[in-house]
Image (cartoon, rainbow, N blue to C red):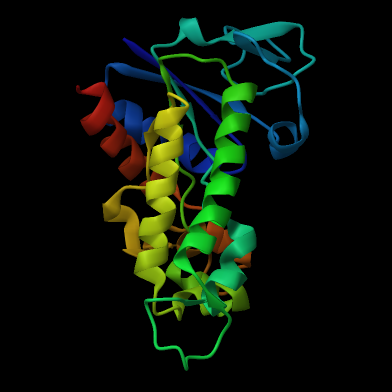
Length: 253
């Protein structure tokens, strides 16, 4: 039996919803889920050592919230694989800027938008990615069985409720920006000895955007009015697709 712990924030719901289908498709896999409040990751400066502290022992509750002051620990060694989901590096705070940039050397100089050199933008991305990977390494133990699973990109339909995402979708240099970002992530994850599973290509509709049928919004009542968060979070079909990619590239190997 392959014991898999999945750690995440609100994006964990897609994997929990897909758990039954995943375990049916892979009978040798047993999934456990552990929720982690984003504030703990982004604000906590605690060194976790060799384990994350929990409110309850994993043996008593497989769907619980990680508590850094808990009395018990989540021992990574108790699992064959630990998946850290919900962290994507895709720089949401830069979306609006990415949509308006005129990258030097990629477009005509008379295009609208601020002119920014590729080196400058690469440095900005690299600084953020490096800080993020440093936090990953500080917050989580240096375990060989941990895999960082990239958070999904928003649905293409998110552009209808977000001016920033609409600007990004209209960015003619979007592919170059996407490649620049991904190369930076791969470089820094490798440098920190972190195993990384990017969003599968089969889930992508366009650079920085997921296929619309994989979002939570796609499964809502037709009369409902999805909010931006419904286009940012994916559904069980997406999680099953990610696990298929994980199995193909890591578990099966």
